[in-house]
Image 1 (tube, rainbow, N blue to C red):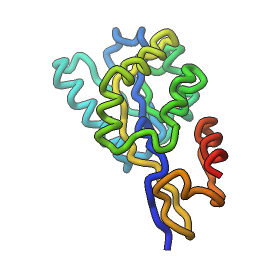
Image 2 (image 1 turned 90 degrees about the horizontal axis):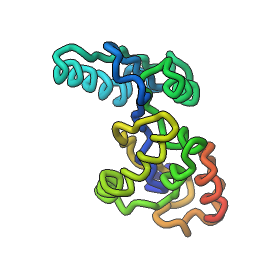
Image 3 (image 1 turned 30 degrees about the vertical axis):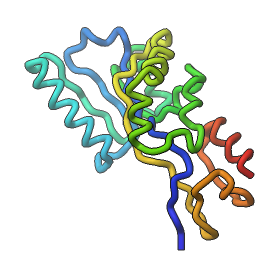
Image 4 (image 1 turned 60 degrees about the horizontal axis):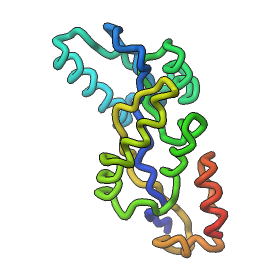
Length: 184
């Protein structure tokens, strides 16, 4: 029986950023990797509706799901270069520009969802946002993509000590890789 347990709390799986110079556009190009069936696409459609409503139709979004404009790194480069207006992707995609985003890959960082929201909606979140300003990116929002899980066939994982002896596959986050090596 596979058990899903909270192993780390990367809640910033979708940072929505846009080019600082893109505000004059009438129709903003908004790219993301997720498919049209994903909650991020549904949220992007709602954001388009609200933007259109609040600006009386003066600003709209042209949505590009399914990595249509490239992978996250290509889209971030496009935003910085002005060929794409907005993109939404995980925090690990920004660590090359702002290493402070590695912080969000620390396993067991947040006690729970409320703690994560309070932290990211406060001074810590503001400082993270500022770290990308000088890179030509402006963070609009943090997108919660739920908790990361550790799935295994041995035992529940409730603390870092429970990882001792387990072989774990991680994403390419240097912080994540280092943390799981330390956990054993």
